[in-house]
Image (tube, rainbow, N blue to C red; front, top):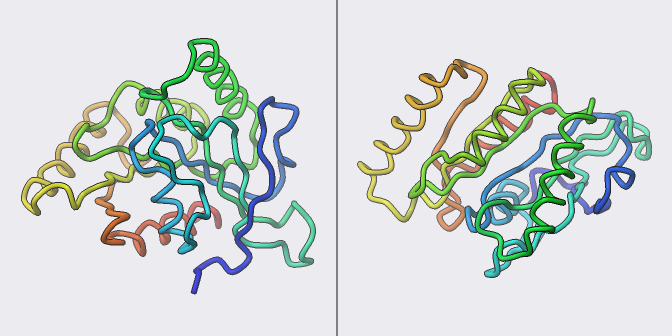
Length: 209
């Protein structure tokens, strides 16, 4: 059973004017193409194919808004809790003009969303935190918004190597001055490892804890 029985797709936005109503609370998910963002969302929500999974990088071409919990009245956007699936970046095999459009679209999103309560940055544990990931974290920091890094595909490494990668990511974020504003965990969509911890962080963000 899903931890979020109300979970459902709301809308996709190709332009800022198409963003969902800026009320309630939402947590955005960002990550490089191929980092496992859609798979992570599916496991956290516990819904198969909730967020589309593709073997072709760059398939998420819109900013997609998903309902997690309805408002008390069942209809108002003001009391809703949502997640937002941002376009993948980095390896996406799309035109330069599309890459620029995504950059501008995400910039408009971060600059305008008052309902943004947190950010999940999805990072392939084998690649480590990269420049695009840092840009996402910088946007969150500018907004005073907490961020959480999921080191995905942890099952691809042996336990000792995965732990070392986690410690290195924590050290990197501390050295770059994020302090307690950014947390990090190991995650495997294949093994469903780390899902409970991720949900705890997600719920805390949505509830302003």
